[in-house]
Amino acid sequence: MENSFAITTTFVAYLILMLAIGVIAYQRTKNSTDYFLGGRSLGPWPAALSAGASDMSGWLLLGLPGYAYAAGIEAFWLAGGLLLGTWSNWLISAKRLRTYSITTDSLTIPEFFARRFNDNSKMIQTISAFFILLFFLFYTSSGLVAGGKLFETVFGLDYSTAVIIGTVCVVSYTLFGGFLAVSWTDLVQGLLMSAALLIVPIATMQGGFGDVANQLEAINPELLTLWNDSKGEPLSAIAIISLAAWGLGYFGQPHILARFKATRSNKDLTTARRIAVVWTALSMAGAMMVGIVGLIHVQSTGSLSLDDGEKIFMLLVNSMFHPVIAGILLAAILAAIMSTADSQLLVSSSALAEDFYKQVIKKDATSEEIVMVGRIAVVAISVVALILAMTPDSTVLGLVSYAWAGFGAAFGPAMILSLYWSRMNRNGALAGIIVGGVTIVVWKQLSGGLFDMYEIVPGIIFSTLAIVGVSLATAEPDETVKAQHDKFEKQLVELP
Image 1 (cartoon, one colour):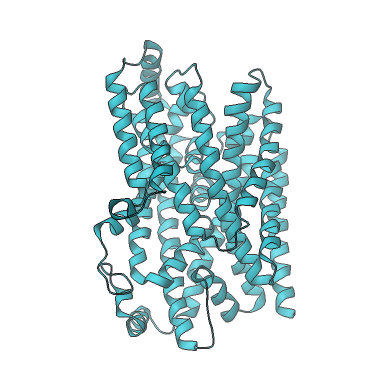
Image 2 (cartoon, one colour):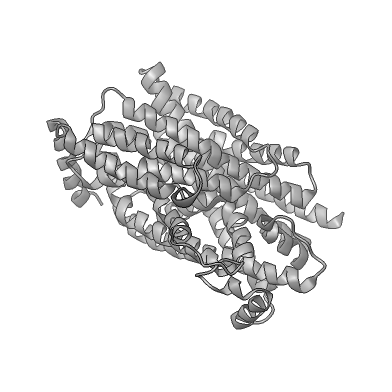
């Protein structure tokens, strides 16, 4: 009873802090630019950690440790691909996207594509918004599932009740504070997540890293190899490519790309990139160690049992730490969940408000009206995601993988080529977005042989081919688009 009270008190204090940040941000949110991009005022630390925290979500403390718990060192293929993807995305996309979004005066990703190619039909903007809403429902649901597992494990709540409580926590401050609330809280949450992932395995380890390797070998030597699975079967090329290919998804994630656009200067992006890469490396190394050390701990004690590997972080915290410290460390899971779900809700609400409501329903809507519609959208989207999350046997990693592939294929190739290739036209962009998104949906329904490959790989390949092929087969961009691209290239050099 005393343990439960201490953990509950810590959780409540954490939530109050997040809500306080939301209130402060609410006072600084005056228009749609503030609400959706924070007035383009992020410094390198909040930009980097907000991008990282919104990226990693609950899967960093649940999904990745659970994978390492089951597969051992094999999880490095996934972690390594994500680390390389993080670095590449900041290096290749950040400066150009921030500059081009200023050139086109665009807030959202769909709006950027529409203005980049002078699409007066608004077809690109509408279809892009549709895919954002589709895939973010699954992505947001993954966060709510993680929240359900957290509250179910810590407080012994019914799963459905736990999911509802987690949803209310996220919506409460996203609804009012908008992008600034999301980014400021992500800074705090990102630091808490990385600290927890480093503290827990170090405190649980019995000996040094060499001892951990020996202990893992005693359990199952196959857990120490990159080339075999836990049963000793060689990993196929399809399996390795599928794991490493997660890194390709970064180029199309709207909630991460929004941080690039919101940074206050191009110069800050270089510093932010370094911070983001270091944070990601430390966090993923810690997450893998949680799973590996957790497996050793469970096997060595004999008194612990675990029916769901994604709960290993929570099991270690509850068994190794004082209730007050445990409450702080478990709050890191809530931080991971909230830091991603809030970003997803915000991007989804901007898609509904800016890309549907303003473009299709009421073109002369005021900035204040758009913000209000965006807030209503946050609630509506949360309800739908909540319904999807009500299945207790959902896995966090499974839901994330589908949404991650969807965004990576639908928007990744279109984003990179639109930033670098002046010959790309409106028809090519539209074809790439549609082909990428549809490929993910269709490929996911197939199985066996080549279809066992992670759907992001064929999605990106087919999307890229569609963009290049259709762009070259149709007319060159008009003079307005060419002039705008020339202006962008000039601003790329001039903007600080």
